[in-house]
Length: 156
Picture 1: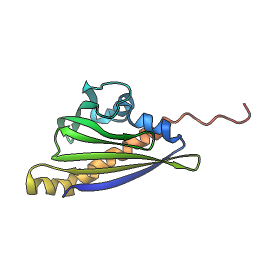
Picture 2 (picture 1 turned 180 degrees about the horizontal axis):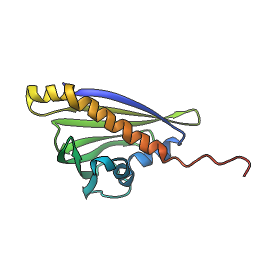
Picture 3 (picture 1 turned 30 degrees about the horizontal axis):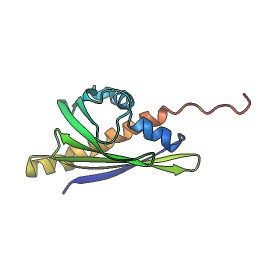
Picture 4 (picture 1 turned 60 degrees about the vertical axis):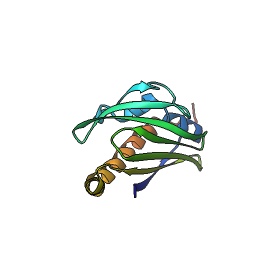
């Protein structure tokens, strides 16, 4: 049974803008500087679309990882989902939703994953991975929301 959690983030950006920023490889790299994440194969810059893959290389928990993800579903600008096709997890799916919310957008990230290694993997999920992954998504979302252009002064 995979671990699942949901992160909700509000932004002043309209849904289309936040949708595009969330699937922008360069923005993702910018949000993951702490883990030295970089795109090394597949789509390595700009926007990724349905059916396309990206291979990431990064350092997490002191270990270098490579993970290839594919965009498996896209309904612009409302949502898209990506899944690991090769990498450290037994299973990983990330669904991104963008809901109009007043003058901005509510971004809802639903993450489901399972670690390999049977009972040891399940223990790691509970003790380390669930919180680590949630923090990673929260920090990524903080970075994306901070990319919103400042509001224009109505007097200008």
